[in-house]
Length: 151
Image 1 (cartoon, rainbow, N blue to C red):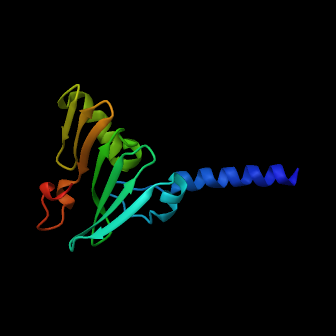
Image 2: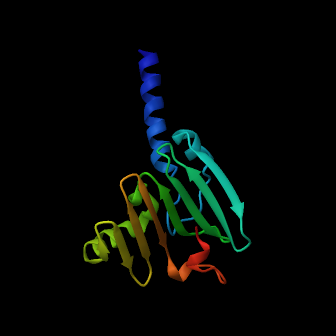
């Protein structure tokens, strides 16, 4: 009985951590991705570019997700490239509702989507097994950093 209770408690804890340890959430403080990479069995690379940091995570699906954080720790951009589009609800965080509302009216085709709002830009393109995209907050780009600098 105690063994079953311990297993159930562990499962609930992992589920809670899984949802609480969000990575690459736009507009949020950058997170420690160590626990996320362990839970997802993903690889993580970090690099410092002076006015911003990049956390690059290869998801088990093969998609590479990059989180761009300013020196104040706030995530100002997220990019992805790979066979699958990442969980945009998680990646866009509080901006997901704005994205969802604007997406149906966005300029785009079946293979390309562009949502351009004053405080949010999301561009996604690709086809089966080859997707890439970027989501960023124009007002949060660090001084001297252009969208072209983001890979």
